[in-house]
Image (tube, rainbow, N blue to C red; front, side):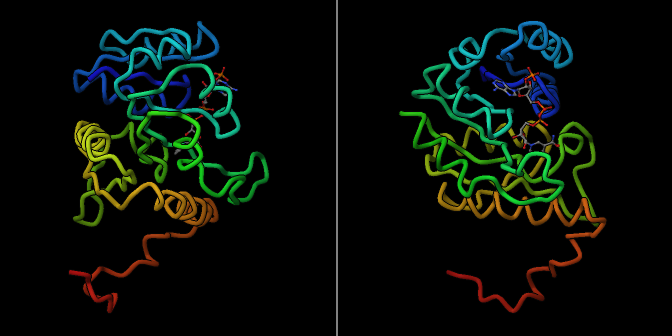
Length: 214
Ligand SMILES: NC(=O)c1ccc[n+]([C@@H]2O[C@H](COP(=O)([O-])OP(=O)(O)OC[C@H]3O[C@@H](n4cnc5c(N)ncnc54)[C@H](OP(=O)(O)O)[C@@H]3O)[C@@H](O)[C@H]2O)c1
């Protein structure tokens, strides 16, 4: 697949490195040519650096790996029509030291702004180091990657991209669910940074007393 990665930081390198290793073609689009080239070199597999517009033009899938505050600029810098946008962002309020959201529904805002694109929220829940690493199972269970998106082809594309990182994709609902995934991330990451094991708060399904639909 042709992947445009917008941003040249930790998430760009973590996800891009795995995708390049899986054989995907990558253009890193960043506002700084030197940093784009540096990230591309680290990603390897023939990845190239370019402008943001270059990354958007190149990608069948386009990963937005920038702060939420940069999205307005980044979405205005290219034509995303027909692209699958992979939104891994978290709107954690900058420098607040707290995990509160600066914005309630980022993926939905992206979808409303990028005409003709199909947005899939994914990869926002765990740290870049997790995606770059090799641990894919914890306590005997595969690490699930929740994906939220409306377009079946776009969800299938991001499903394949998660599998290429040896992760277990999980379609957690349509794009309207993404705001809950975003809020979950703020809550869970806040617990982790407070030194608490969020995993311990969730019993296995059989012990939840939930009546499974259907
Ligand atoms: N790091 C994680 O563990 C993690 C995990 C899950 C989700 N996320 C989310 O993923 C996104 C990227 O995080 P990251 O850790 O990769 O950040 P990062 O390492 O700080 O990299 C951010 C990238 O965005 C670029 N950028 C910043 N402002 C910009 C603007 N106005 N226009 C164009 N480019 C701009 C930066 O460019 P310069 O290099 O020129 O500054 C940099 O290349 C964020 O939304 C974050 O919440 C991060």
